[in-house]
Length: 190
Image 1 (cartoon, one colour):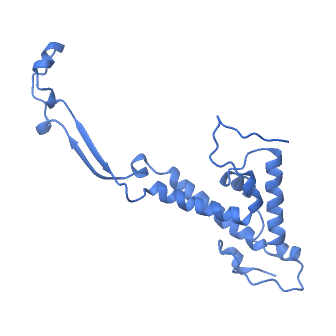
Image 2 (cartoon, rainbow, N blue to C red; image 1 turned 90 degrees about the vertical axis):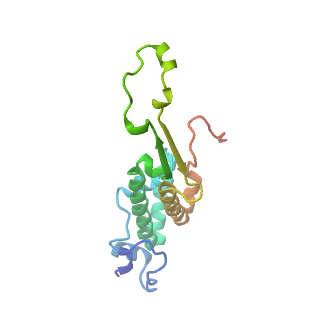
């Protein structure tokens, strides 16, 4: 049985249900686009901010296997979300500091005429007598408080895809490190 819609993620539930005569493992084995790739585990771990511990990695592997067995279309959906997260992360990394928060208006005030008249003062005492406002350069920038920057928009889209992954793999939500701070820790009782 071939699932043609598994090649176009991330639509959830768009594939027709399997006929009752096919066992679920047969549907997984015959759906070429609906199986985990070797790099998906690490990509999923990074996207969900799961720590690198033996227990967390085994939980990740269990959830990936469970999703593949019980909901093979979900694997295609998860791979689509992982691809979208990777693309958004690349776009975020390519942003320049000016793109992070684009200004509405910038003004630059410098020396009138652009040329400093000669002779410039040579001693500190002569600077007091010299018109120092000619040497000043002011930059005035006004930022938008209303509209979000490109970085905020891309981060929101990336977080939406991460939340969709958490919905597909809900047991992994307990393993996530939300806002990891190296100077804070949680008291864990065993």
